[in-house]
Amino acid sequence: MENIKNSEVSKFQILRTIFILGCLINITLYFVPGFEVTNLFDKSDGIYSAYEIIKILGEHQKTGLQLLYVTIVVLYIVFTVLAISYPKRWIFILGASLTVFSLLWNFSSSGNGKIHYLLIFKILSNLGDVFILSGFFIKHPTIDASLQDRRKKTEGKGASMINKKQRIILSVMAIAMFATFLYLPFGVIGECGYHFFYEFKNYYYGCGIHSMALIVEWIGIVILGGIFLLLAKDE
Image 1: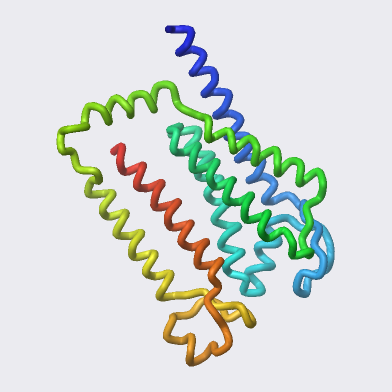
Image 2: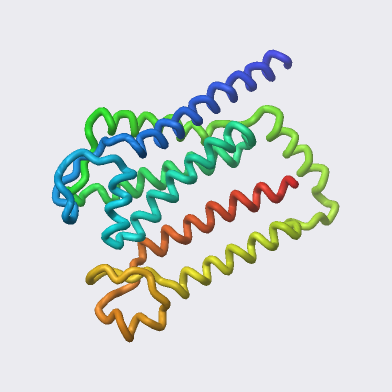
């Protein structure tokens, strides 16, 4: 029995190290020039980092894409810190899920022809993604077990599903969701930026709602709100 427990601890430590290493690789590559850029707005062709490309997107009102990339990098930093200081299973699952979303996004938007990975950069990026996907298989041998015991003890006692802090967090999430509808990203025919919905017909005729930017906002609210909900649950 003791050998099984030691094996689980060893497995957890190895997988957690791999997960953290993957996050650190992706965070580091964010600042390393690894994209070959051609015909991107008015910029000279050359090798740029993701950070520099994000700055270019912001200069040309590509707010949705800019928000997406910034959100992903910030979340990788958050997951790295939490994996070290608060290594619960949901941390690793959320981190791996973020990588799945990022891979699907890159796959669906890979045909713009203006930005290409350098080979070594692509290899390192894929390596980091594979490391992070290990989060689906990470389970803390003591913390997760204690949480399961706590859940069993509270079952059947009529305990409230959510506490006061979680209700406040849900209210904030609902307000943030409403704000995304009130202050919409407009685009399609030209870049119209973010404006209140009542300005749409008066000043931005010919533009439509930038649906992808709106979806990115919702994903960010759900992920960040979910993190705070889970953190509040254990307090």
